[in-house]
Image 1 (tube, rainbow, N blue to C red):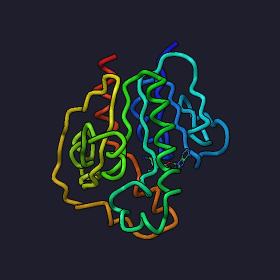
Image 2: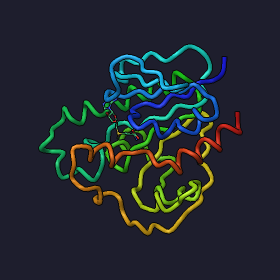
Image 3: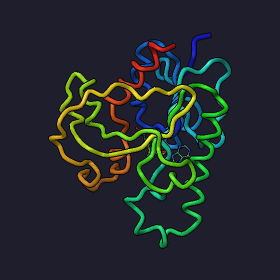
Image 4: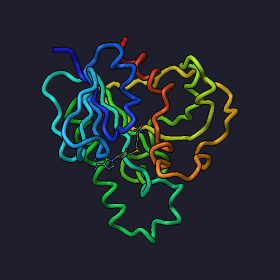
Length: 206
Ligand SMILES: C[S@@+](CC[C@H](N)C(=O)[O-])C[C@H]1O[C@@H](n2cnc3c(N)ncnc32)[C@H](O)[C@@H]1O
């Protein structure tokens, strides 16, 4: 049975693209996918709550998690009091579910979130990066020549991949995405350069 790749809180599927292209079976779990399982080639979109996700049996090559950061990130700290304790508790519950799955599955993993509340629970992040530091992995590096610093908490042999930086000519992406119905999804897209680099670091290590 070939190892699978599991990506939690993944609507775009960008993280699994290189793994899927290499033939891995990939699962992207996100409440925004259609309910149940939708297969797109060897990628399974799992529409539902991560807290109820039952991983497939068999070996797992990699686990990625991109839990919602709205009620955790320092960028929204001025609203913490207004949002209240329950918003914080709900967000931490999702991160806790991802953390449980990462530990249960035993494969190299990361949990991604911007700087914020998680350091009080997980400690300082293992790594931090801006998308532009990995843009050089792309055929057109200019697409991700921007900053949007984020943090990784990692384990089970995760190796921070080699950087191929480009100058961030696009500036910061934190506040640049224009208002639209899809703004939240556009702002949280996984950078493809980082995805490619993680794949190369771990695929060859298998
Ligand atoms: C910060 S975004 C990460 C997006 C990801 N980087 C991507 O490229 O699609 C968080 C994602 O978590 C999803 N989400 C929120 N609550 C969820 C839950 N309880 N179970 C599964 N997914 C959830 C949202 O729909 C959103 O796509």
